[in-house]
Amino acid sequence: MSIVRRLGSYQQDVEGQAAGLGLRLTTMAGVLNLTGSGRVQAGRDPDFRIMAVPIEAKRQELAPMLRMLGREVSPGAYQLTLDPNVQAVSG
Figure 1 (tube, one colour):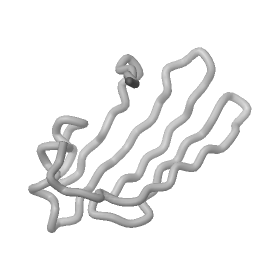
Figure 2 (cartoon, rainbow, N blue to C red):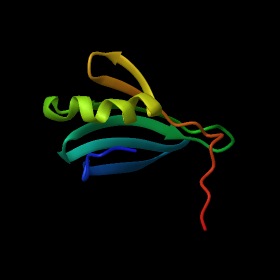
Figure 3 (cartoon, rainbow, N blue to C red):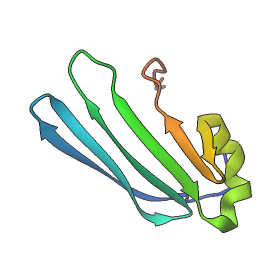
């Protein structure tokens, strides 16, 4: 989806809560900064919001991929949405 290789290293923290799981995404290092948070609760669709901001030097190269994954909410910043209706297929 992108000519840029090695977008970065990311950390996903999961915290047990009374009503489900709390989620937090942070960037450890890389050309694409991701931050996000959300929750997973039984019987409900996951709610997870991610903001993606590429470093200035890679902004043009990453823009096409980021436009496919979300919408640009300010110059160079994309709100990504996870659609629970899309299912992964494994071979």
